[in-house]
Image 1 (tube, rainbow, N blue to C red):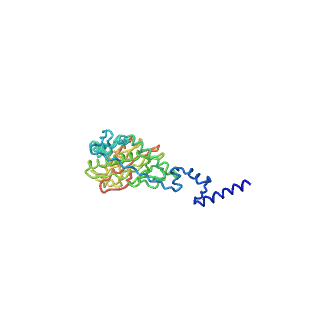
Image 2 (spheres, one colour):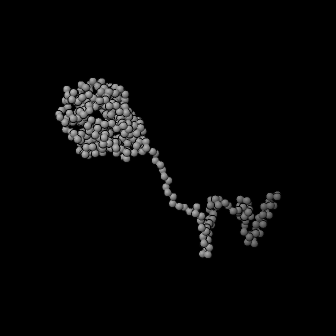
Image 3 (cartoon, rainbow, N blue to C red):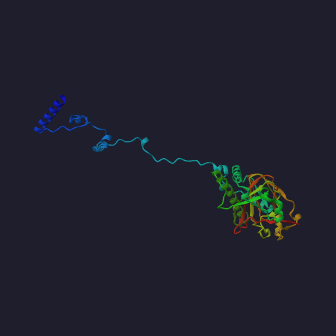
Length: 344
């Protein structure tokens, strides 16, 4: 009963509004147009953008122009950037540890040492490299395996090879050799290895320069050669470092240089190079050569000797690495060929 009366009242009210031209209220979520007006609040910027409401673009006001009557304030001197000199970086003292050989190696062979070298046949240069260079080279060459080197026989015949190298132990008790060409250097893992290797090269180049002064003939240093006495090695046979020493010019014979990294022994027949000024043969009368002198040098000592002097490596019972270099005169390169002496 009440529902029917209410519905009739609402119908009558709506017909009256239509008769006078009043718009019909729209339905909203809240039920009336007035509710929609109350819910129309300002949305945040993010919600307005999501709802597709276009917001006015913010306009930055232009900066005020300076007045001509009022000068700009001056900045304090401390705030003005100035050109600063770049910081100085002090490099590691590799030169002090390994030696500035480009400067102080000019006297590696003095006039006095040069005279001894030419007359006696050999000369020693103690402390040619620093202790750091010696230690670093020992560490670097220790990584070289025996099997990657080749045995050297100094001209020995097949019978001597069999006596020296027994079957599979041929790389255990013998002298080994490996040449480091310019494009094949040891595997250097740090700057100390590079500095040590560079120092040794500088010493050998200094010997070549000194040989120029001693002989008056231009010389050059060959590639560095790694020589190793592995295990128990007997005394080398007597030999020269040139296969035909009588063909050498007595005033410019060419030279060999050994840098000892630990105590090393080499036997020399002093003055024996004069024999080959009188004969063209490696058959030598022992009494003419005299008795050998065992020269023991410590690590870091450089031993320089003539190519035509008779010598031999001493016996070794310990693992011993050293570096060898040929000092050839201009236009000459005989590699590592030697001349085996036959005693008569």
